[in-house]
Length: 104
Image 1 (tube, rainbow, N blue to C red):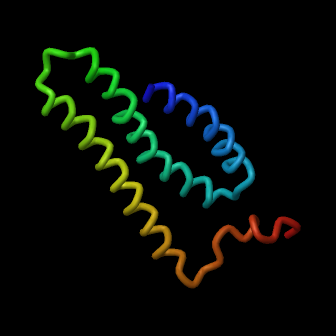
Image 2 (tube, rainbow, N blue to C red; image 1 turned 30 degrees about the vertical axis):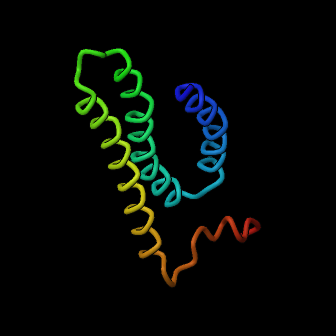
């Protein structure tokens, strides 16, 4: 169930992410690549450790569940901190001028 949801989300989001990378400038690509790191960590902990959690039944639930849930929380926290940092750095600056003025 959860693995299928991750696969569907990946099939929908991957083309959109690639299209976004293709349409932006160098600085936006760098920021986007940095934003992908916490997202990939979320996928690793959300899907990868979920599969391991079900396969390794001999591990106590608090260990395998703690790694899975704790990793997801850390990945989402890192993404939130990164996003707030980008907003803070961009205050007073025009963000992605090519997106608003494609003719330039």
